[in-house]
Image 1 (cartoon, rainbow, N blue to C red):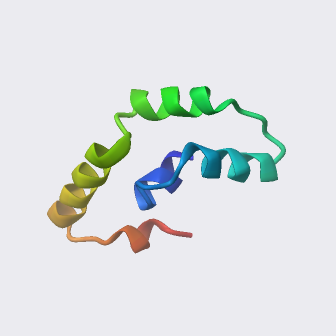
Image 2: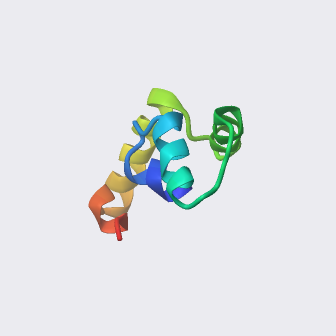
Length: 66
């Protein structure tokens, strides 16, 4: 779940819920939000921070996709 958000910071909690449901895992959207907030991944801030990190290490988000 965290990898998905790091690759695409604009992923919604509903999208994450559907991905987890495909693996037969039921998780409430507030649990997903709480987990993302603990990892400091939320909203536009996460998008900006991750872009800066990618620039620093010289990689693109596509390198993290399977």
